[in-house]
Length: 184
Image (cartoon, rainbow, N blue to C red; front, side, top):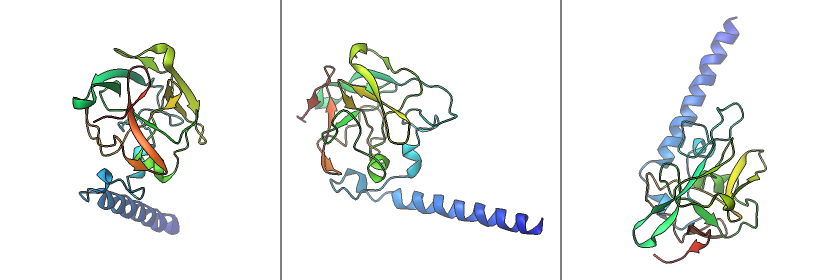
């Protein structure tokens, strides 16, 4: 009994240290906006848990259907966003399924859905589908492109990931037709 009580606080201590280290590594360095493929992000960003801004898709999480809509983002014009207005991106390295995992998916979290994804204002429901990721989660696709967020975009209408070359290819926002938008 004493052993169990002693080891539990250590586990919690090390868990808290790990969370604190991850938070410190992500704070204020400005590395997200860089075009280096070495940018870091908190691992919770990829979890897709309902309390994160990156959709759903975790086993045991409540069924949450993702929404894909069209929003306006400055000089880029009408682009794809999620149901809260957060910008969605395509990865030019993808060929029908996601080629972004591990560290890449920490910086570019996939748009996950535990229910059938829905078309919001301006989006075409006929272009929305899903692909199953290696971890078994379901990533939303639009016109065949798996959709992602960029962790440096902290709110609606932000497009800090536009045109970045990270993890072996370029990242772009999408038009309502599902084409990459490479101006801006």
